[in-house]
Amino acid sequence: MADLLASQVSLTPGVTSMSESEFFVARARTLMVRRIKLTNAVVGGATNRILAAACGFKVLVHCGNFFNSTDSTIVPAVVDPINNIILLSATSGSNAIADLGASKTGYITVYGY
Image (tube, rainbow, N blue to C red; front, side, top):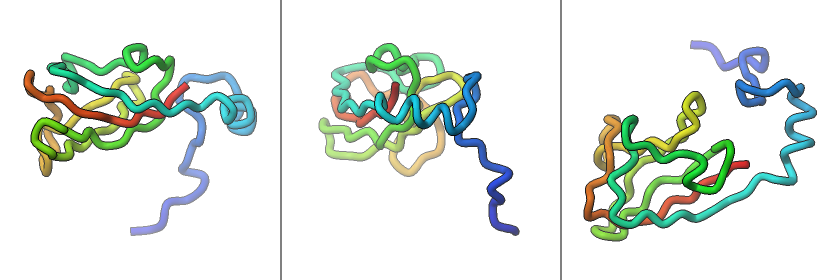
């Protein structure tokens, strides 16, 4: 295996007409962070989605793991940059994507524009 080359990395989101330097100068001042509380929400999978608009953003950039305060567990989470949604793991330690259970309440930190 070889190291990742700089030429293989694109720093801009897929949908923009700005160059990389223009994007980061224009967007650096408006990146926002929000801590979102989900209460009894059956969401997180590819069907019952956590949309950017639901979190108060147009574009999602990054998210932390979901802290399930119901039973004090951590559920892995990731931003899907193609569909602009947050996906949650079925259970801690699993790579499968699934919805949270109906009785789950917790917090997730989300970064976006």
